Amino acid sequence: QVQLVESGGGLVQPGASLRLSCVASGRSFSAYVMGWFRRAPGKERDFVVAISQGGGRIRYGDSVKGRFTISRDNAKNTMYLQMNSLKPEDTAVYYCAAADLVGRLADSIREYKYWGQGTQVTVSS
Image 1 (spheres, helix red, strand yellow):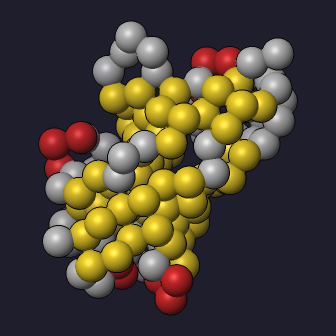
Image 2 (spheres, rainbow, N blue to C red):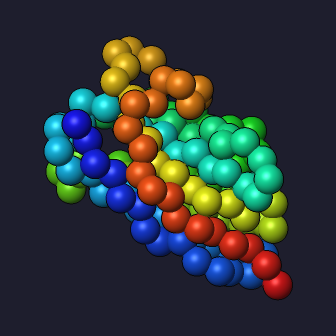
Image 3 (spheres, rainbow, N blue to C red):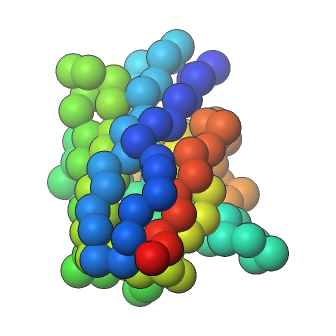
């Protein structure tokens, strides 16, 4: 069992930056592929980015490539999402998630077993 808690969301203007954090407790954080997903108003939950257990492999969704950066600190049981050049279309509830995978990443919601409660990011002028 893994418990995940996101933080760092807020209201920012277009072009600004935010850094989200996801703190894990319970079973070994370093054993899990971690991912960020988001759900915009009226839309399905979409894949943002995933990172392997050691951080050496990363997969970004097309809409955030070049603007968002994922990282993890296994010693602190924490994952981060640095979001730069934010756009109004990035407005969503952002969720972190953990997947019990070996040797691969995943961008499907169905493969992630544990989820946080979400943090709201609003980009608006």
